[in-house]
Length: 193
Image (tube, rainbow, N blue to C red):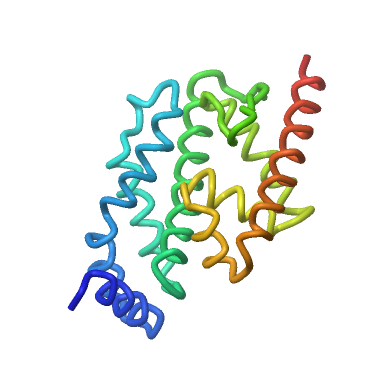
């Protein structure tokens, strides 16, 4: 059986309630998950406290503990993994700031023109999480696109597949979400100054 077919079959088995399917699925997608985690960790200023392998393992545990396994396909599974990695990183950032300072002081997050980018400190990640949570309350679809692209590293085509929409819609949502987050983070930075 070809790798793609095997992944599709394991996703289908998981959706039908086979709890062991996820355990067999992760090794097949481990390289992609590790690439996603390494991309996220490359942005970390203090990455030594959490390595990509640990991030993949923590995300895996959350996926298994979640127990839903309602993934439609490979891209949908990777989207769920991106969401799990986001939760792990946010929890890690919260622990670090709590231990380090006893609290959180929000700082500005910088966006590049070509793509969504930031230099991560725990405070930056928490500021982004707060802004992303506010965006989710305003427009859940735009927030999901940011999560899939930024935390998951998914392409526009993969995002469209996960969200069951067109690439063009994903592009529009990505552009609008970046602008909204930029304004929200700039306003947050102005309030703390």
